[in-house]
Length: 245
Image (cartoon, rainbow, N blue to C red; front, side, top):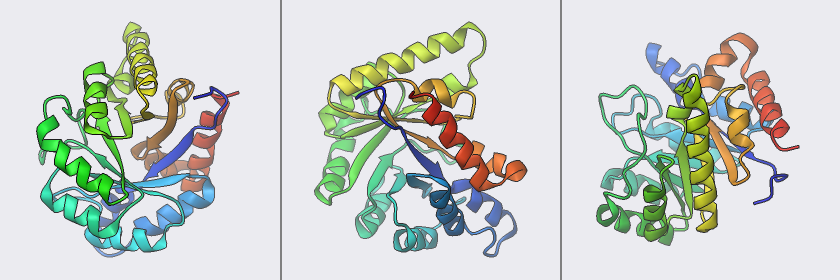
């Protein structure tokens, strides 16, 4: 991938639903937020339908599928229930993520290397349905090799450790991301990245030559409290574009 190619921005609207669900009712509406995100420059929308439905609901997925004019990336656990939902809705992409009920957010990457046999039929069913499969994995060559074996065309690198790093660890985590991104791209995978990215730390990730897409949610929804959702997305778009002169 050329370093001058534009990095796509996927906006995750889960936490608009989190705010709505705190009070019940219909406001704020995550579908309205998705439409506003697209108008502000988002290239796609991501939504995680968790097994406990703590934020996005089945009805949200129904409405997003009907309303969106850009690709929908459905984040999902590797379960029969989620597979059935994905096959019913046929989103543009399905990103398989690890999921634990007690976690506040997705805390680590999928252990694709340790679950090849279990993941293989699920990945095959999604691919056969024309859904682009992504695996949310740590920036680790073993996990990338597993994605290749599984036939997933995309990996999303988990940037949580990078985002939380301080001092010398920042350079170490950046190097891990750079190595994994280059290794995956050389193996024929499309490389995405996300988790904990902001205006500041998102730019170095966007600058990595192999990265094609960033998926960002919590930070943008939080920043929208102060400057508005459209302004937050436009500023993130500017930061990402500045990383690719």
